Image (cartoon, rainbow, N blue to C red; front, top):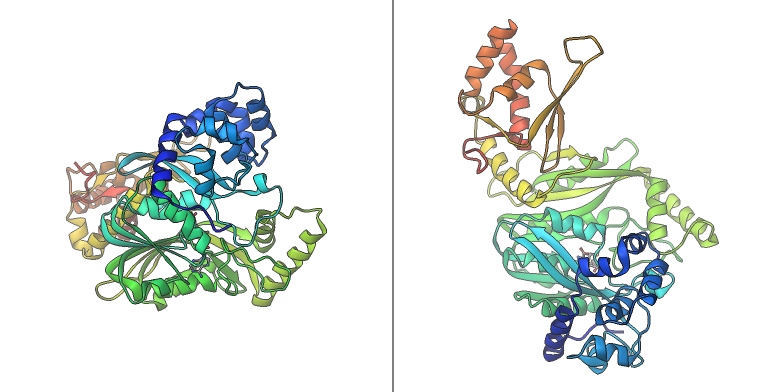
Amino acid sequence: MTGPRPDPASIDALRGDLHEARFTVDAVRQLWGEGADAALGRGHRTAARRALDALPASPLATLCRAFLLGMGVTPDELDAALPRLRAAGAFRLGLVDEEGSPLVDLRPYEFVDAQGAGRWWIASDLGELAVGGALREDHVLGIGGASTTLASIMMPTPVDTTLDLGTGCGIQALHAARFSRRVIATDVSERALAFARFNAALNAVDGIEVRRGDRFAPLEGERVDRIVSNPPFVITPRRAGVPTYEYRDGGLVGDALIESVVRGAADVLTPGGTAQLLGNWEYRAGEDGLQRAAGWAQRAGLDAWIVEREVQSAEQYAETWIRDGGTRPGDPAFDDLLDAWLDDFTRRGVQRIGFGYLLLRRPAGRPRPVRTERLHGPVGGALGAHLAASLLTMDTLAALDDDALLALRLRRAPDVTEERHYWPGDSDPTVIRLRQGSGFARERDAGTALAALVGACDGELTAAAIVAALADLLDADAAALRAELLPQVRELVADGMLLLPDDPGYA
Ligand SMILES: C[S@@+](CC[C@H](N)C(=O)[O-])C[C@H]1O[C@@H](n2cnc3c(N)ncnc32)[C@H](O)[C@@H]1O
């Protein structure tokens, strides 16, 4: 199967039919019910199939049966569900075979970004549920957790040209097209590119150009202003019998694929251009994984902000990706694969594997020290906008010396709250914690002086005046208090918990 074919007239007909059938996330959930919908999310389709069996025939039910559950429908049912396209047109587009059996997964997808709410239909290969077993090595992934993660952190700042490296079904290219004049979507897989082309056409999104090739090769020396990539970063043992899924495995040893993408980004970004990647990094014996990732950016001469979201043990990591390929514990192949993964990790002394986001920028001048954060908890919303605003703030902050920073009238961000814990009966808190409501939803422990400073930052007094008043109040040495608070104030400003006067949220 070569993937869907984007015949323009047939795609227009399909779009019209999907609209008319109300093939939306909400309508589908309502059709088979919350329970069946949740069961599908957990990887079981029986409840959804039973719900459809009990319902009268309808275009929506046929679309769900065929393209969400991957079950055969008759050409007559398809004719009724897709009155403009008809079964023959669905066959022409490569969505079904001659008998009406689905060849692709096609589903509604909804999102909210800085431009508002959006709604698309996304085609990809049929998933594990539909094929009833392990996936093909050239499987083209639909929208998964990593896809929505990258989409949610994309900075909405307008740019001219964006590269979506490893576009798969094209989901990141579609998102990037909302803030880019032009998107170059690349992949090693011709089938992936067929899906990306198809999805762009189906959703009438212009400006996406697809190119085939390894990592940055398709650019042929061209520069881009932004890179977005959910690259094939899964660490995979190089041993016969271990499947090498194109959608997750870039063919290199350990975490070398991500390192190579970081290095390549430095060569193709225009000055000031930014890259947003997801990736894994290995914690090898005696080496902190997050600092290892920071080292890649440093050596590439890039500004970088790397946020670690999760760390797994070598064993957990191996299990996750063996299961992802459709092999479960209890299957003899599971133990063989686990041995292969653990041997591979042992060879490099890997004990744990980190996962997170890399935000890179090609600096106009000398690169800044890499910022790393471990933020393993739940995050708030609007991360893309938060990252974009934070980049600007970090630039302003870097240009302010301590006196200039203290001369500003800082303001506490409106989403910051304070939590205090006391031993029963005590009047002094044992813990004061500042919490951010949006963005990364950070928590920062604060001493009495810092909490009081944040409380007083309402835009009336300069930070210097607040520190001086606090020194009086707490009977502390003013210079020592200033030296203690300054780095913490810088951190809170960089976090977006204290706002600079030029911040859009300051007023
Ligand atoms: C994890 S998938 C991401 C798909 C999609 N962008 C998303 O976010 O859902 C990685 C993609 O990278 C592609 N890929 C694998 N090796 C590659 C390489 N060496 N160069 C470029 N793309 C590659 C795969 O075919 C796959 O489509």
